Length: 68
Image 1: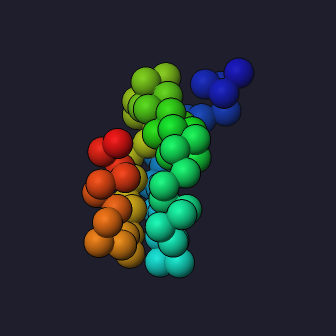
Image 2 (image 1 turned 90 degrees about the horizontal axis):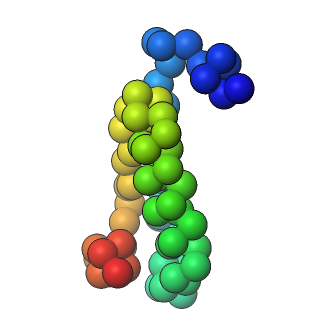
């Protein structure tokens, strides 16, 4: 159904601003897993839909949580 609603020229740019994110927000493993699954599934089933994903204003410790 979704395929019929999206034309071939549509694309999505996802911008995630972590400016007010706290350490406890990023250490929530369930929330991180849901977010990663959302991005992965979008890429898997709609590879041409997600054009770019920017994560901005990341705290210094963000790479540690993104990799885990």
